[in-house]
Length: 430
Image (cartoon, helix red, strand yellow):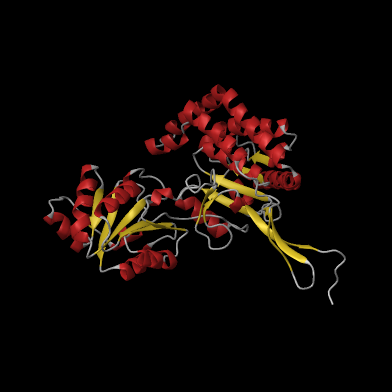
């Protein structure tokens, strides 16, 4: 796949993709909902029809990754199955069923001058998506960009190039069936890493970059991009158990937030417990973690309480643990005086991703909602709900901790902007 010999070749490739994408974005911007939905349905059908081809391409990628020494977690993200292919197809069908955000007019009102002023939802234009190891992102990202009227340039990881090409071919069949340009969804054909640098600097052609991958990738793109980036770096998510919290609710929420899946960005990494609640809730939580093989790293007060309850092997938390996104069966635990200290702890150590409070006091819940500055803030619910599907977005292109434009799970609405529109009838300003 590395048929480009010089930096100039890579730059020329990205410029060509960008020019084609810009032209396709103008076609998509005026495409009707029916055409976009027809493309999505046809692409879903192609995924199912070409399942064996996709799996064969994926087997080639998996074999190559194993030869390069990839670990089991990496292979798990890379590997496709018949079930995953069907899930990709169903994901496209679900996107087709979602309301089309493009062209929606809101807040239309008359002004004293007689004109009507409102706002219209419009596509961003060209979206560059840079991702690693997970080939199913090709279908999800392509589908979301298509429905929201955006052209997409997809740069997947070199380890998944054959899988991504096979999936992109299905998306192109869908576009062709609907009479839409194939350049609406383009896959960067080279595995040369220089393509990433060119793409994130292609401000003439690309309107926004969405990185999907590890922290090192996102950090690099955030530092080097000349195009706006929708991203999050860490998922240091907290659950705070307030004084007077229902112990059964606290146990269920903490268990789900930490142990339902360990490797996701919305998994709880730090448990905070109010001092008044700790004797009633922390021993049961500690025993649950111990039974599930979760390593606990706790403050001195938490360690003493857990030891008194018979929970053994609790380690001492270091300063680094409060900042850690483990993505593993490890949890940091702290007992704090109360709500003020919990909010301060989250402000200092959190990543503005997702944080939750367990409480029976609505006034204190409202304080938490107002004062915790995160993309998703929850009351009496697991952090694992911070997900586009769970929020009713159908799917998501990623999670954003940005404060401008999209924040939290980014679905169709997050891939659009709004412009002001004015309706008049010969009006002139006096």
